[in-house]
Length: 67
Image (cartoon, rainbow, N blue to C red):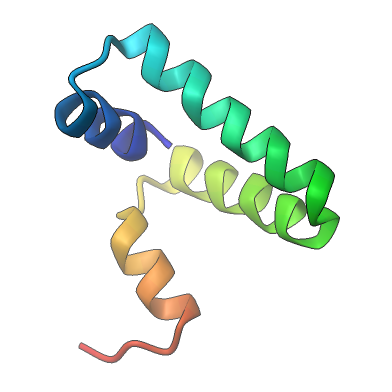
């Protein structure tokens, strides 16, 4: 999740705190509107944090992208 926060900071020109709040707000929004997607986002965020995966690589893998 830190990679996404850093990306938001760079692209939007916002602080770490603002980016963190934005990421959590988006995750909460999708969890409420599309519960299945919210669970996937929660798992994805947990996997990134625990294993240090690259978000782009993980999403590419989920979408069937080949290297």
